[in-house]
Length: 235
Image (tube, rainbow, N blue to C red; front, side, top):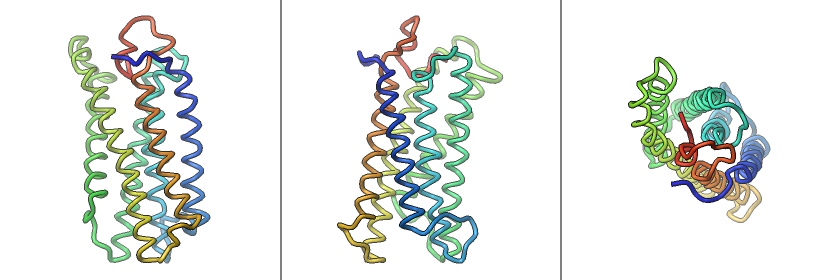
């Protein structure tokens, strides 16, 4: 059931938080962590791609894909295509971000997949890919029957939000894990500016995710029937 608030003002706040979170994670990895690189002698520069791509590419673009149905004053087929494309870009950048982490570990002699963050991350990206592939086939091309689409639509919305909430929570867990490593290994000042920046980036990320979920649950101002009000997509 839709939350009895207008979705549009919530989307404006979500967009603002998305910009703030993107700026914060870039400042952290470029100004404090030395920059970004795919090939470098300093392997930390390779790892720096991971939080940038996962936050901007996966969490933010994935969130924008979800709220596109409520935030864009366009015809449903156009919003549907934008929804599909943004999710595809988010998935591709998310896979690239995970590859950056594996590349950094492999070239630095660090074991892979030993932490809860990495386990959840693999699960999230796998579910995200599954969600995109079956949704493409059912709702876009070749497309399922009207009965199949209407039957799967609630599950599409529920699974999508479930995976997205997991992604946001795991992003926060990743910030915590990296900051803990820096504070214990690199002796980063626990009350220094970098530590505060990382913590506040995680908080802004969580707030953005909360607004995405709220937007998905809110009433669409352009709805002409109740279908738009009961899911984030009236596919």
